[in-house]
Amino acid sequence: MIESCDPHVRYTQDGSVFVLQMHRPEKKNALTQTMYRALAEGVRYADANETVNVILIRGTNDCFTSGNDVNDFVAATDRGTERPSVQYMKAISHARKPLVAAVNGLAVGIGTTMLLHCDLVYAAEDSWLHLPFTRLGLCPEAGSSYLTPALMGHQRAAELLLLGERFTAAKAREYGMINEVLPTGNVLAHAMQKARDLAALPSEAVQTSKHLLKRAQQGVIDETISLELVNFARLLHSPDAQAIMQAFLNRKRG
Ligand code: COA
Image (cartoon, rainbow, N blue to C red):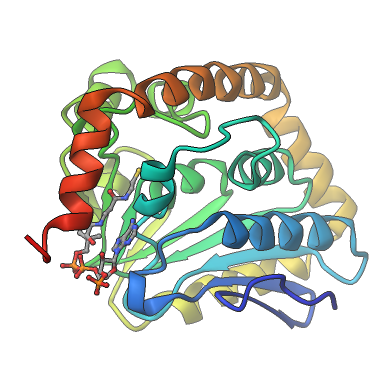
């Protein structure tokens, strides 16, 4: 087992299920660049390691993640394709092994868009999701501008990505983003059981089947991620986006 490069991302292994945990509860598991690096390294390690058959992604007991750390958006330094956040998007979109997600509490921004790359998603009945990009002066990322309309149709995708209102796990299930909504407290155990069930199946058959399911979309997802990044970087420097981020960071001091 490799060591995580960031204490806010934890690696554990349960049989042949590799568990990747976002653990920064004091900041609602907001993701910094080193956390993304640890997440990307974890996915790549698990994908290549022959003792692992399934990767499970989780947050803490009451929060999946509040998304990208807003301080990082304000700093707006290098937005190149080698950034750890981009590496993480690529790692999950290219993973050969199945990804299972257990969602408790809130899943904001990449907390929701990463679910579009997972194969099985389980969420608590009181959890909520949010794609707030336009409200932040930004545009979709992680391939979500392609994956959401492909999954649920244009009008539903526009509702989530243009209006940018938070939505319940029940709505996410209705729109096809989530497999099952579960009583709070049961989510992790249920997701873990499904991960174990999947891990017990012949791994070559599961991985080949996953490849076949995703094959037609892979090229367009890569292309979409690249195009989104160019637009995201441009919008991030806009006065609108910078003012909204600063207002969030200053809200309690003001
Ligand atoms: N980036 C940086 N810090 C964040 C954060 C984020 N994405 N999300 C939460 N935090 C911090 C808060 O600033 C606060 O820090 P403080 O205690 O030092 O003031 C702490 O985490 C707890 O968050 P708080 O806002 O008090 O919790 P809440 O339950 O009232 O609200 C959210 C939770 C997620 C609704 C709210 O924090 C939020 O809107 N966060 C920003 C989400 C966002 O825009 N993400 C980017 C998506 S692209």
